[in-house]
Length: 321
Length: 56
Image (cartoon, rainbow over all chains, first blue to last red; front, top):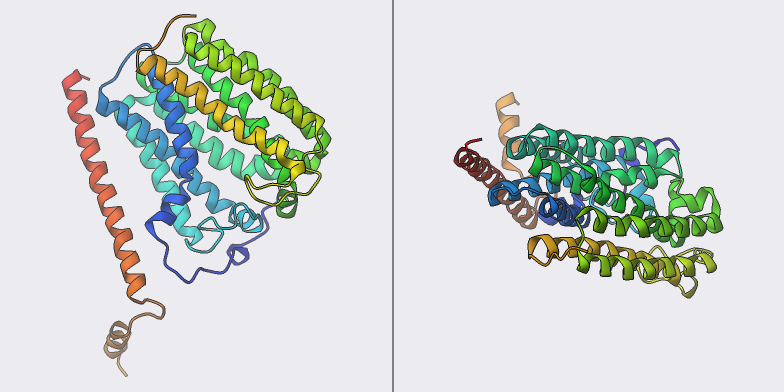
């Protein structure tokens, strides 16, 4: 799908002035909170420690990088966002913030975040952060999203990298352990987004986004959700064998993996997505509830895994498995 | 009408749609930007201090 629409296709300008809250929404605060959370886990799991101010600056740089790339995403995707019920109220799509302001804010924050990371943690982490911003804002948003049903599989790498960035910021290098954390988020992303896409297929189809349910159908999407969910289980348990996850982590990872696979199995056996969807995140029809439940649980599972790591390494609860 | 008078009349009348609510929202937004900039400067200063303390 080519980007054919100009500024004029975006919803007509809102009558009210953009508030600071609109600019905050432009930075995708939920994504920012996720990267702060996973970044903090990566930082605490690292074998060395940094000064509190430096640690704060590292997390701020990661959050600002995510916010900047989120603004760039909303700048570029305003045509798509305006066509989808779930995203039509976003500040650029709804006309509350002009596209050029979103672009300016996105570029400014992206550049400042990388400079801040250079200052706080050095070139390795800053280069990794710059790569992540480019990967999300340019490669995923401008190339993958409109051209392939594997968009969120490959693009998921951008959302998966923050623990590795934080680890590199603290240690100055990378190793297998942070890459395991990256792998968890990378494998978690497809079932998470495909579960949502199952019951929002009509929205994606109307916007011309080639999500898997649109291009390969619902049955194939449900099958791949199950496949990725099964693959996620060993990846989620792997940190226990590399000195990252202790007993608390293993219990949460194992119990959560069983529940995750069970929910994915329910989706596979269901007719999720065949009702057409309502465009809402959680308020869905009876037939789509299996997909909605998996979508909701996937958020809880990822949060629980990284909360366990934070509790073990930040609060001293680590007991080797 | 000279150029100077055109400039004066444009400045005298507020642009359409810029009511008190708009001004208030814009002022609040500007304050957030200003505070963010001040915060950034303070953060850079504190990072410098921390680096100097660590001998880096």
